[in-house]
Image 1: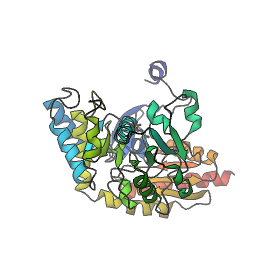
Image 2 (image 1 turned 120 degrees about the vertical axis):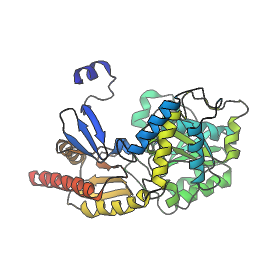
Image 3 (image 1 turned 90 degrees about the vertical axis):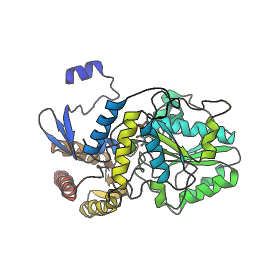
Image 4 (image 1 turned 60 degrees about the vertical axis):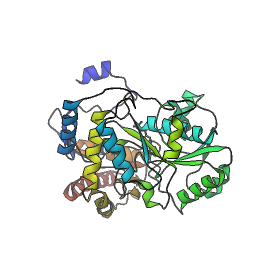
Length: 395
Ligand SMILES: Cc1ncc(COP(=O)(O)O)c(C=O)c1O
């Protein structure tokens, strides 16, 4: 399998981990040699309920037996889409009531940016340094990492960057601004939480000048930070939210969500303001419904805060400078980038799956499935501490 993987599948780095996967179940992924990996990553925050969850699998199978794709968005009313959009709207504060389902997070970012331009009639977008919102060219244009963007310029014009958490930059949001796009907690930058009512201040400034606040909830959403969506922790209701990743419970999905008034402008001038063939695919929507329903009917969302405390209690070590983030979206910051890489690779050998963050080399990502047990947390943290001890003794 490995030979064909390197021969036929496009590679985007020179050193992929290239572990050959056999199957995955609950909090574990298994390779073709029978080795198990305790999953502290959850497919990069996507497998909300772990792997192979029986309710998600059942929902997928039932929907496949009824119908798969039937027609592009809108021609046919499909029960899984209706159920999912209704469930989302019922669990979001007003006026976030209308949902456009997409294929991926980056497509949801595209939709949200287009919607803000259409609604305001303006084209300037303000984003933050070190942000990540996806990798298609519109989404990339609002990513604040020039090392990734420069090779692909020109990207879309009219984008300005401000510093996350810096209230002094807010004067850059003006009557020309269509939207400010922020991650509720900056992900790739190192799981940086908003401080001092930052999000509320941005929203107030947006309201003052008639701009829209778009919050990217692709990582912070779907229960990971102790509330269904991360913004609920920070005393703010944005104009538009973007969701993805964990919303599909391991299946590919995205969504942008706004008030009916804002969303309605996709209908005219031009009509078909956003087009997608597969967005809201019935099988994916059924999986997403099962994920959300299970989350909302369990204590899993609240338990993320207890699990966070447990992880923080364990991860105290001379090589760790800080643990950032909220709930089960945590970044362990160690003294050097070299230590972070050593920990990630050695833990992998020991059967614990960890990962890097995009723009913070000293960070070790911990984003397990929300279903991870306390015993599994103890087991994983013990492996991390053992590995840090080894590295400390060697130095
Ligand atoms: C905050 C954030 N926004 C957008 C995206 C893009 O989502 P997708 O990879 O589904 O296009 C990601 C993915 O990592 C993300 O973390």
